[in-house]
Image (cartoon, rainbow over the protein chains, first blue to last red):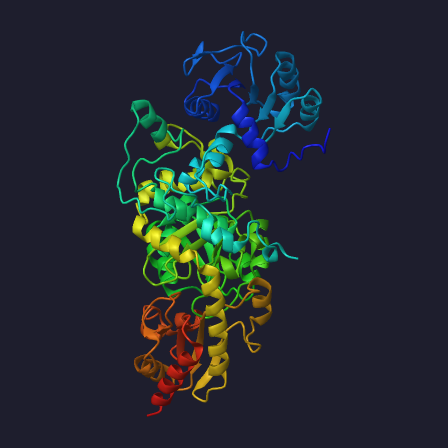
Amino acid sequence: MGEPLNHDSYSDDYLRGILRSVRTIAMVGASPYWNRPSYFAMKYLQAKGFRVIPVNPSAGASEILGEKVYSSLAEIPEAIDMVDVFRRSEEAPAIVDAAIAKGAKVVWMQIGVRNDAAARKAEAAGLEVVMNRCPKIEYSRLCGELGWSGVNTGIITAKRRRL
Amino acid sequence: MADADRPTNPGFETLAVHAGASPDPATGARSTPIYQTTAYVFDDVDHAASLFNLQTYGYIYSRLTNPTVSVLEERVAALEGGRGAICVASGHAAQVLAFFTFMEPGDHFVAANKLYGGSITQFGRSFRKFGWEATLVDPDEPENFRRAITPRTKAIFVESLANPGGSVVDLEAVATIAHDAGLLFIVDNTMASPYLCRPFAWGADLVVHSTTKFLSGHGNAMGGAVIDSGKVDWAKSAKFKALTEPEPAYHGLRFYETFGDLAFTVHGHAVGLRDLGATMAPLNAFLTITGIETLALRMERHVANALAVAQHLESHPAVAWVSHAGLRSSPYHALARKYLPKGSGPVFTFGLKGGYDAGVKLVENVNLFSHLANVGDTRSLILHPASTTHRQLDEAQQRAAGAGPEVVRLSVGIETVADLIADLDRALAAIGR
C-alpha cells in the first residue's frame, strides 16, 4: 500500500481513471423528480453512455429514466462497477458495506457527503473512493463541457479535449 | 507569503495564453474561432428538454452562452483564481448582473465613494429605479463601511485601485468587515487587472471587470465580466434567496442545492443573461481573448512607463501634486506595496496649479496622448474628468471621487516613455502661454 489517498484534493488522473473504467453505476438515493440534483446527474451520465441503476426504497416509482428502481443494492441482479451515494454522510457506512458485498469497485459520495471512516473501510476492501464531488461535474470538467458554462475547469492542454 | 503573492500553478502567463482555450473541439483550430451564430441545433426533443432544464451542458441561444464567449469566461475566471465567470456587454452590465443576482427592491449596499464616475451615477441614479439603495463612504477609513451597514445591506463594493484617484483600498480589512456582517464583498479589479492584484486572495467573494480596459488592452472591444470565487455559502443566511430558494421559471429548481459552488455562475447565465440580455458579442470575446494573451507583458511596460511619467510630473513646476500609489509621497504607498506588489497601475491623476482652465488647455495641447474617455489601451490616454466623465457630478462629489476641477487623468500606454514625457512637457509649457 502506498500513501493514503488525500480526500481533500483528488488528482485529475485519479478521477479520470475512475470515470474511464466504470460502466455500470448504482445510484443510491436517485429521485424520480426531474428537478432534483440526482435526476440531473443520472440523466447526464446516461447520455454519456453509463448504465445507471436507481436504488431508492421510497422512490414511489417503479422506473426512473427508463431504469427499474431497486430498493437495495443487494437486489440488483447484475454486477455494479460504482456506487454513487446521494444520501446523507451518516448513511455512508451502511452503503459502503452493501457496496463491498455487491463487489463494486468504486464508492463515489456526492457533494456534501463525506464519511472518512466509511472511506477507509471501503479502501481496505480494495475499493476506490471519491467524496464530496459529483461525477456529472467531474466528467464534464475533465472533458471540457463544464467550460461551456463559464466554469474554470483547471484543465490546460494544447490537445483536443476528451475525458 | 500572502496567498496573493504565491505563484499560480500553472503560472499566470501560461493561464493567460491557454486557460479555457484548448483546441476547438469541432475543427482542431488552435486559435479560438469566432462562433458568429445566434442559435444551436438540438439533437432531438429530449436533448432540447435537457438543455432547457439545465440538466446537460450545451448551447441553446447566444444571449445565454456562446462558445467564443465561454473561452473568455473560463480564462478570466482562471486568471482571477475564481470558480467561474459570466461575460457581459460592458463593465456597467457586469455591475448590474452581479447585483441583480442577490438584490431585491428595498435592499442596500455600501460602496466606496472613490469610484469611476459612471459607477457613482449608475449606483446613485439608475439602480434606484430597481429599488436598490447605495450608501457611498470614504474607503480610506475601512470602519466607514461598518458604520453604514443596515439590516437590508447585502454587499460592500470597492475598486481595488480606484479610478481616477489612484487610491488603494485596504481589501483585507474591508473583507473582514463584510464577512463579519454576513455580506458579500465585491471588488472591481478593472484598473489593476489580475496581473497586479488578486482580490480573491484577500477575501473578495465576487470580482467584476470592465474587460474593455487592460484585459482586452487595445481599446477595441467592449466587455465586462463577473467572476465568482466559488467560496460563498449562499445558504448561511436568508440573504441570498435567488440561489437558495426554488426558482419558479425552472419549475422549482434550487440553484445552490443543484449546482453547489457553480450556482452563481450557472444562475448568471440561466437567469441573469436570460432576462437582462446584456450579452457580450463573440467578436469582442475573441478580441479580448487575444488581448489577454499579452496581459503580463503589457502590464509590466504599462506600470514601468506610468511610474516614470509620474516621477517626472512630480518635479514639474506646473504640477501641484501627483497621486500615484507607486510614489513615496502617496498616502497609499504602503497599501500599494501590499496589494499591488508588481506595480501600482498605469492609471493615475495629477493636479495642475492652473486649475480647471489649465486642465482644459493641457488635454487640447497634447499630441501623442489621445484625449478620450477610456483607460487601459496600448496607447497613452489623457482625460480631464471635471469637463467629461465626472461632469454630471457637483464639485463636492467630484472632489470626493478624486476628480476635482484641477485634476487630469492619464492612462499611460506602452509607447517609448521618453516620447510620452516630451509630449507632456511640450503641452504643459503651452498652458502658460
